[in-house]
Length: 387
View 1: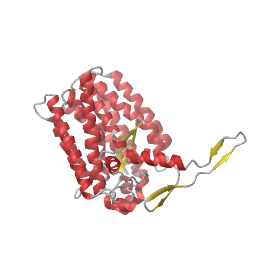
View 2: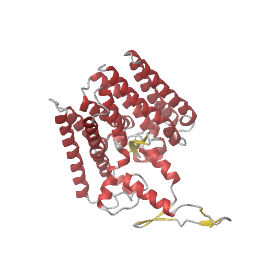
View 3: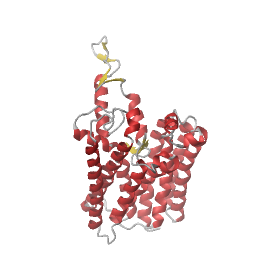
């Protein structure tokens, strides 16, 4: 795994690409646990036969619920770009699968928080709403799609071993088609960024520069020789920054200016995002060790890594709350503290007891509070103005 994703308001993770940050793995696991058992037969995914029996009142009960549910879940996973997808042969659906739509959501949320932080976004203004939607399309389908596709391309050898059914290692999409998709998505994202600069009447194309920077980070995250994802610190921080800071900056720049103090504040949240990304490393310790990936649980061991994880999540959110108190945004700061406390309680209840077994429970229960905290911070900055 390897990516940052909001699913139903939950921040969950996926380590294999920069824009899928720490959000989608947990969702994948939740779905996987509920999904029917499947047997892979060459070129076909076939579900086990479902068994049913009739009760005394004549109703039919499906014991295993495997055929229809497994097929529908498999198709849904394919469309969202999640693990356990069906082996689709339609090229358009395969292209969509490579962009992993499930990972677009955190970027859309980040744009929303940035727009709120600008203090100049009007929720009832159709033009402002249209601008925000265009910025979301740039950040999600285009540039996140580019990131996911390029990540799958550079992971094709590993996927050939671990996930041979994926579109690239299975040969269902050619090298030329993949590279064309990467070029179109990147070009479309950068062109949209420049269009937003023109629309916002920027003398300096700040949105374009932000998009170029993010695209470069995405590339070095996945591609050799740097391949940041091989390093637990650099890779996870790159994920946090890509899912929180960069879309926030873009959203704020569309509607107003962005000064360095606000940028630093969003970087605090990116460091909290680093902790979120670490959560997803615990399930992959053995595989990471074999592949030579220096995840924090591999480098420091489970007990030390779990404290690093919760420490980064809690400390940097607390620092943001302190900043809000310092600038006089007391109601927002108090609201943020109220959202941090439940996370700490849930860390004690689930994650610190057994980070390997309880990672999904922890993320599903705790991360909605973190996600709401980011929006609270954006609203506080929008209310206060430049720091």
